[in-house]
Image (cartoon, rainbow, N blue to C red; front, side):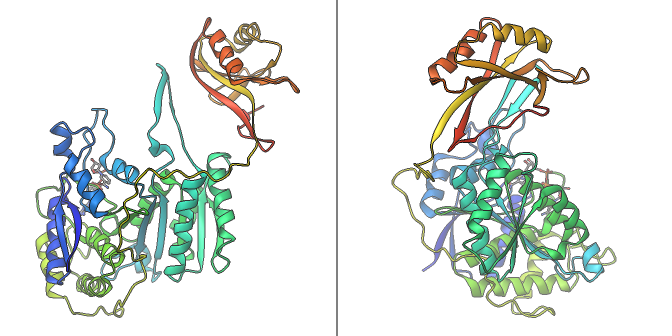
Length: 485
Ligand code: NAD
């Protein structure tokens, strides 16, 4: 009996490379049945605000697996990216992106005889990809960066399990916790906690800018790296560059119930419709998907043929030896089909432990909610009120002082995160949005309602842009200090 999966052909080069890959699957006698779903640019254009039909959503939720071509989200219409929506709505929390040197794909490193085999695991749901942004004044836009303990734990545990499965001995956590102490700090802290459960994997952490420098100078020292969403996105494109470009970067978006397999690259509008796109990244993503479904023999067969084809110097226009004429997408797929059964010079791929085999698909009855601790003692100690103002810091402080009740004190005013009151520098340039920090007087009892009253009182003199409470968790402050505070 064949396994049924959902397939979305995608936009731009999507239909061309998807057709090529499915033709290779058919030739390799892969036992899959496809239910095609309606997703992508034309469905936005037809008025579906999420870029997919209700039927597509139903099909993907029923089948639990989507093989997708790249998709375009219309720009300037205020709609959210279909690719990000799909990953977020269905909670595909781990984005595994495998990068390795391939014979026939020349790079600086292959020419230097340095093989690359590394995997990026990118958190796939949270971070700035929450897409929660506000223009607070005409001059100031603010985005929320959401990092959660349960979300970090899910992807970090996935990364450790994957490292074990692949026989890796090391896993690094890339981060910027030196600057983003609470968000990246939480991600790093979770990594260090979970690392204790995997003593067989050497864990380390590295600041993301240092990581980038080391990846381009000595990539062979890394095996697997787990990162938050945006940093993981950027670092994985860097890694694609190390192994020959986006044409060779597959990706698996893994969730507990639904998973999505797609290439890292986009719709390549500059070459769409010409039949010249490289189908390798989508084929490699398809190979990961076959392993995930348990079709390990077919996956190895196709992978051997692909590697053999690349070794023969057969290439599309985006890579390869310029002395050898390039072939189009269909001819490349024909070559992979003709080479089925061939073994690459590097040696045969047998059963790669790339993916956890997940043949069953669960359908939850309600939304899953994870809370990691019910015993943490929370205490509200103050508030940051963000206001729009063209005043100088001293003037602002005088106005704010007038709103104080007995329980509160004005402790600090900052502009773009830099303290400008009670002390600061005359050289700090200002924009028209300030943060005014009030803290409770030691020993006083305050309520959330009283705090909100401060903001309400300030609104008599200013436009209040937003309010953030200052909290302590088990006595530890849950907010950062201003620069210079
Ligand atoms: P892109 O990846 O589409 O193209 C970047 C460059 O790489 C182009 O020069 C393109 O020709 C080339 N390229 C990409 N894939 C190729 C392939 N298979 N064969 C040969 N050359 C290839 O990135 P972009 O131009 O920034 O984005 C174009 C569109 O794709 C945008 O609408 C973007 O939002 C969307 N996008 C979608 C996804 C996805 O569906 N997961 C990912 C990234 C971008």
